[in-house]
Length: 202
Image (cartoon, rainbow, N blue to C red; front, top):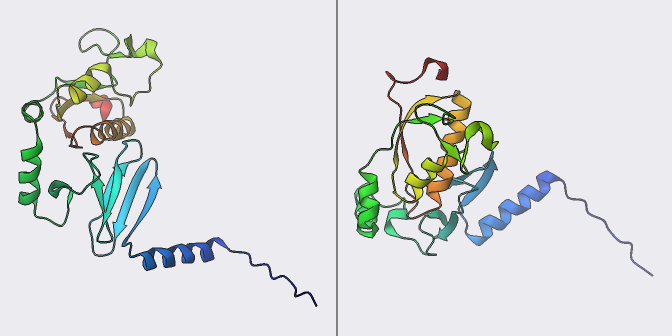
């Protein structure tokens, strides 16, 4: 006598429970979600990590915890280990930086408009064309911005004009995605002198 087949349908909730069980059995102590190209990693009694999905950054799992492999060497360096003290991490990172990288961290950019002007003072280009001619989005990085971030290792950016808070946020995410994926993954700091910021930006 042929035994009847039993069909099992998994709901999203059941599938999620199975996945959680699998993670727990494998010893993994972190989960990851992605929203608007930003990935957020939460951990059991560990640091919350965030990084851009467009940066090329990969995660390392050590002792069940997640760490960002910022220099993409496939191993956990002390400066990438959030379990260490800030002093220990800073000493390790400083020892890995080249003279050119250190020099870039001591510099500030020229005043930046987001987006860059198409004519007059502070003219910017996007793929060799003015902003109006390029078809670029307001939040895209200009040629000059890409150059001082990637070639000159500058990480302190002076912004004096933004089109809107939304554009500023998207531009900021684009900058972070770029610098997070190069060199040692050092993020940039944004300096906005409020006495010089355009009222149209507020």
